[in-house]
Amino acid sequence: MTTRKNADSRVLQLNVGFLLKEGVGTTRVVSFDEPHVTAEDVELRHLKGDLELTRTAHGILVQGELQAETPGECVRCLSEATVEFLVEISDHFVYPPASAAESEYSVGEGDAIDLAPLLREHAILVAPMHVLCRPDCRGLCSQCGQDLNDAQCDCEHSAIDPRLAALKNLLEE
Image 1 (cartoon, rainbow, N blue to C red):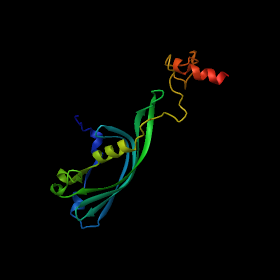
Image 2 (image 1 turned 90 degrees about the vertical axis):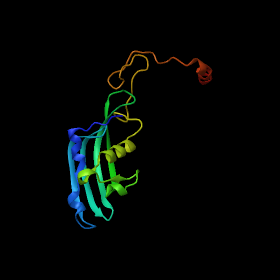
Image 3 (image 1 turned 30 degrees about the vertical axis):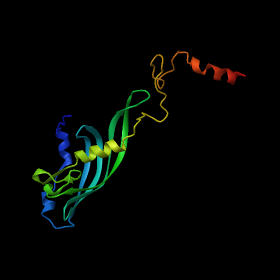
């Protein structure tokens, strides 16, 4: 899969060179209030929150909470739905990068950390498997495709699966 960098994803790249020159324990707070950001291939809307960056002996510790929304599609009626989520971040970016294991994040070229892979990972993990536009979504008619949230259809829904007809007869007795 090809990853494309959008101009709006640059806000997720934080220059931490000034923090790497400071002593262990030095902290800075970075605030986000972005209307639209792309974290690799995941679209994030209304990204808000604060992250505390702390210099450690082995890099930068990033801690905080970010809230965002991501667009989705309702599994019942196929209309656009919005998924809101809160991400709690507590991850260490290793410096120098050569000492990082494959499973760890590291400070990249130009003394920058890229939050895009981290946010993408968290967004995918907290996203529900079945997105609903609203909890009481009625879905689509299985026969004509009418959105039952907008209007009723004239389809006859009393057809019984022939395998269950015997059970229906028991209910009628």
